[in-house]
Structures are given as structure tokens and as C-alpha cells.
Length: 263
View 1: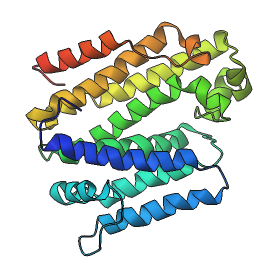
View 2: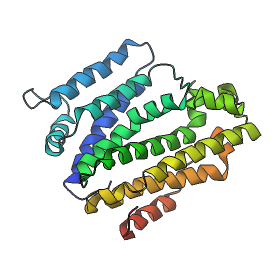
View 3: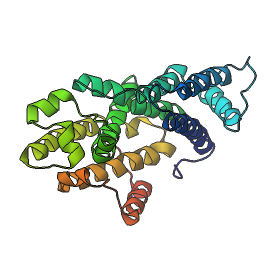
View 4: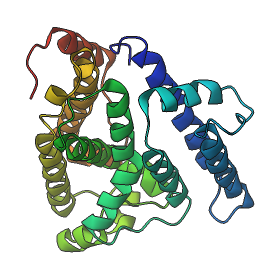
């Protein structure tokens, strides 16, 4: 986010602090545990912080959060949907269809993009919302592939059951790290699907305020390079989380600073 100029940078950090607080609460909760009520309390605190007529909740994140909500007119629907996504992760995961996975991606990622776009500013084109939605889906599909082994160890598999069935792969095979041709074909299908959402959102940056285009592009490019790294050896995700070396990330940032054309 260092590419974002002030005061928008501080606003993005305020939103990030709010998201991190929600994420930490979700990580501390166990399915069926009463501690999940903490997310309900956080939802209520968020509603209070978004209402200038209400006193601020106690805690360091709320003053900057309220200021950002008011300054950039952040829609509550996106923020509340993010919390719904966090809560859904407390339940057993079962995406029967891609529609189910898409809905999950929208909740946990597209809403983030839609919120950031409100801070970055755009040209008012009605297409921006759908472009931001698609970009969030692209990023989250990349996350799903990157975290396949880690999620499997936790008893989670976000890949649609219809896709697993089509390619003859089971969640247990993924948990055991069993690759093979069926898994490779499954991954190739998932990789191509993710690429399609990067392509469908390729013109997002050109609609943003010029001073924030590089930030949005750098985020996209980092994840797109990660997707390409996974594609080099899809079976690697069965054994470790694929990541990018620091020099690659720095190269992306440098490229964002030098980029002159968008979309």
C-alpha cells in the first residue's frame, strides 16, 4: 500500500486494521464455539462506528475507521458482507458448485476490492463495480490454489465438488498429497478459470484515479505472478505454500511505479 498517496494511504490502512481485527477474531473461534459470538459483537461495534450519532466503541481501530467511512462514504453492505464471509469460515466448508465458490470469493475478496475502490476513487463508470468484483474473485481463486494443502490439513477444501468429481480427485487425496494426471488436469482447469477473471478485470486500473492505479496494479500483478508460479508445477501446492521471493515482489513494485498504460 506504500504506493498509495496520503491521505488515501491512511484510509486504506484504517480499513485494513478493521479487516485484520475481524480476521483475528475469526481465527480465534472454533466451529460451534460460543466465542463465535465475538464476531456478532464486532458486527455491532462496526454498525455503531458507522453511525456518527452513536458513541465510538472502545478500541484503537475505531476513530480512524469512522473517519474513513465518513470521508469516503464506504458502503456498509460491503463491510457487513465481509463479516458474513468470516463467519462462513467457522462452518464446515463445502462448495458443491462454482456458484458456491464464487459466492464465497465475493464475500471475502470482492468486497475488499469494492471498498478499496471507494477510497482510491474512480471515474464513475457503472462497469467499475463489476470489474472490482471480478478482480476480487481472481485474487481469491489464486489464494484457494496456493493454500490447498494448508486448508486440507484443516479439513477444508474450497474447490467445487462438481470439479473434483469431474476430474476424479477426492479431498482425501489432496490431504494426503497425492498428485498424478487427474490432479494436474484439475489444477489446469482451476488455473485457467482464475486467469479468465484476471482478464475480465484487466481494465479496472484505467477507471481509477491516476494516483492509485499503480497500487491496484501491483496487487493484481503480485497475485498473477503467483498464479503463474503455481502453473509451473501444480503438484507443488500439495506439499507447501507457493510464495514469491522478495526480489520478485520488489520488481512488481518497481514495475508499477514505471507503468504508464493501464488495461
